[in-house]
Image (cartoon, rainbow, N blue to C red; front, side, top):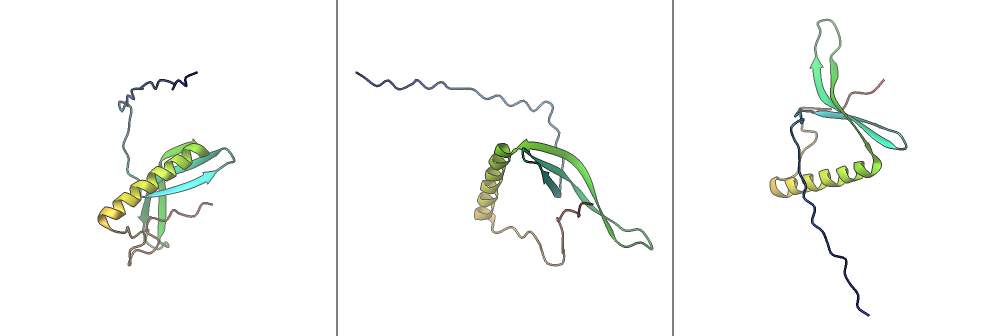
Amino acid sequence: MTDQQPQQQQVQLRIDESKMQTTYANTIRTSNTNDELVMDFGLNMPMQTPGQPPMVVFSVGSRIVMNWAGAKRLAMSIGGAVRQYEERFGEIDINPQGQPGEGAPPSAN
């Protein structure tokens, strides 16, 4: 009696970027349900109106909705990319002095 190994089959991956759009985001707002993670990517833009208190406007450019398994894979992938970047270039300062709250999403009402 011999044990036969199942034969592995190679699968080609084709990446179609024909409908891709590239946008810049400097902040993210997240919310979730039991089934999904919702991520709103956008820009924090300070607005100054004479006679009014300073305001930050969060302009949402893209919303990504994914299941929790996909969210975990994304977190692992981003974590690995950040780790590699910091090993090469040094630690990323997420709150540089002189810029309190920079990059923090606005509070949701």
